[in-house]
Image 1 (cartoon, rainbow, N blue to C red):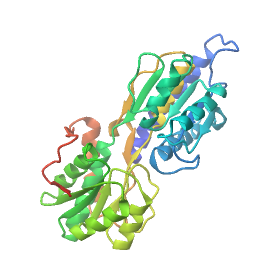
Image 2: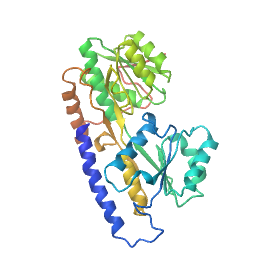
Image 3: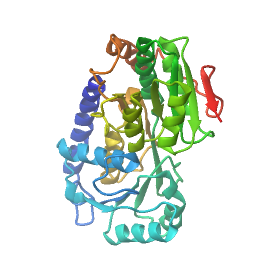
Length: 341
């Protein structure tokens, strides 16, 4: 993780210099968008102080980009918080509030906001809308995404080595939907790379407490997931089994925490802001572990098996230099995975 944060800092510094240069070398008028007058709206399903889920990932990225001297301070951002993506009226009202604030760029932190963004984007052609997991519409809606499978693979290495240390070849996984097994498969592939005899039992659904209980009953000694829920950390601690978090480092201080694959959208947001400031069309925004858009949280040295950091470092280097790549099925489990019905 630290290695890729250094890479991120280098890329960030270069982008910052280019952005500031582009702002200073033009003949600005009162209507030009600059680092000093840009307004950025943020649509959140959670609270403005959220640390979990996509709201947490979005806010962490904004906090990072405002703290490193890029030239955009916190006053440039306007938030619409606790906006239910399933409530079209609430989304429309929140988007309108951000438009009334005269935002030049609006970041929608959930893919479920796309339908409602599409309804309003056409009438606001001078505003750019950046929507998680969307596709560019050729007008003013732009998608961004971060492929977390590389970090999931590394989490599988951590989990697999812990199971080997405990001499119990059974791991568990909570998967949100059977229609998307991508993260589960990446994790299971990481497990297999260091613990060939281990199997992963997966339970579909978001009842985290019940899922953890069922996986413990199945014999799992390490549990991971493709969604974040405080109940996972609590149930694993109560059941005295180890777990890998997902999406953020929120539960890194939990007593049975091992690691977590984490999103980092900061560079993606910087690229989008720079495009707006330079009056250019944003490119497709996507990245993965090798670009720093995702990373593996620092390992819990008190819980991971001996030699885990070295194994993770080796695999991380291989992902970074392209010698380790992934072909992952979305809907077919890999051979060491069983979906528990």
